[in-house]
Image 1 (cartoon, rainbow, N blue to C red):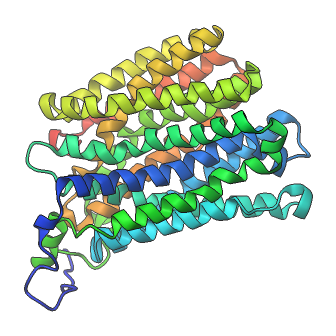
Image 2: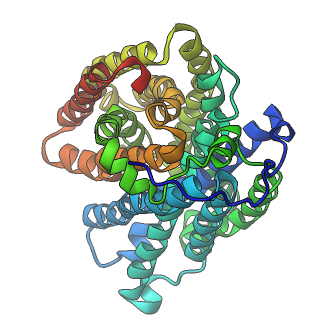
Image 3: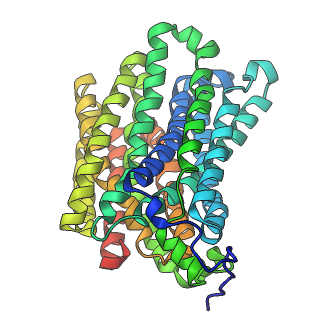
Length: 434
């Protein structure tokens, strides 16, 4: 049974007229916020390949140092479900807007502090420990950001346009990837690799404070979503959203987690792992490896709005099934493309990011769909971040280990298996569950 709580407002009138949330303001707020959050997240992923192995794990051989760096990278994915529970609780009780502001600050402060950390040579083992703590803070903040941003868009969407509105916060991922890779690319045009390792790597982390200020300004200009305002007016909110979720929505949580599995595996093989492979195995110069990332982010971003339109026209579930089948087929071509030289790497990243745009553009709306308003923030956030643990947290580590020990063919098997699991879970989900 659902335990209702009293309305936050003592007035019978809505807190603010819903009409003041114009489509442009809503979509800008959802996009800007996720762009900032993913910029912060991917700046770390890029630095984890380019600089952190040397600065924070200098006493290891190159492969071990890279694996240790990827291990700290994975910490954020284990922190994200905790952030989803905490921020989801308040997002479902006091509102989407306030919670999104708190999530943005948590992520932003953690990122800026990373830019101030001393290296291993300065403070010894405390350096990687502090790095891991800040990475935990990044994951904790992002765990609360994503679900709220998707709901900000979809709960303001007119009938028949949920997939279109829901793809706007998803655009934050490719835009954040483009900006994070672009900052490092620009730095390397003005400073040497030695200077990047010495001090230049700090610039993107410290510069994020400007983006945080912009994000706060945009977020504070919006009002509560219509769906949540109705939940307030009808006294439909629940006392402990996470308890309600695990009591009555376990099936949606389980299926949703693995519906998003292939999305995460594909992306982190095509971004963080690919960057390390290009630099460590193919011996690409840093700048060229970043140009591969920049190309991927552009292709990724182009296909998100395309699939948003197709999802509303032909059905979100149908388009997710098609895309997952294509990811499975693509996994058979992964070994040949990854080992075929620099030209085939560009082909690989182009195809991978076309498919990534097609799956990621719909996954936000799909994961929010099965949950009622009273637990939707918590439910969509936990589902997305559980998927991050299984599909993303260890993907660069697993792919690096498989390639080093068994060859690139097994990296393809890894991606193909994730597509099979995702396809089964989509087929098990009802039409209203994705």
